[in-house]
Amino acid sequence: HPLYSPDIAPLDYYLFRFMEHGLAKQRFQSYKDTKNWIDWWTASKEELFFLENL
Image 1 (spheres, helix red, strand yellow):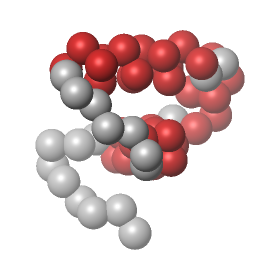
Image 2 (cartoon, helix red, strand yellow):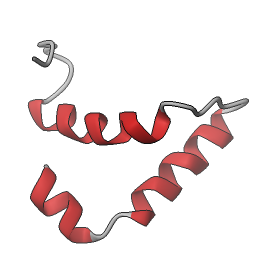
Image 3 (tube, one colour):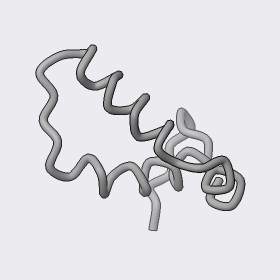
Image 4 (cartoon, rainbow, N blue to C red):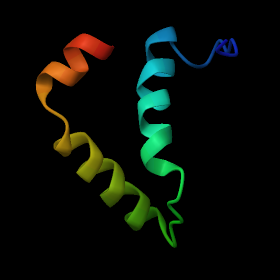
């Protein structure tokens, strides 16, 4: 069950669950590395992924 947080919209939970798998073995050295990975991950998904999963 997802934890409830008033700061996170319920839709965010599902996006972060999908990202969690990809992040499992990642270690970032800087903010730039983190941002680059998130940009890459987002670009690697087709539009349908976001429409169906969010």
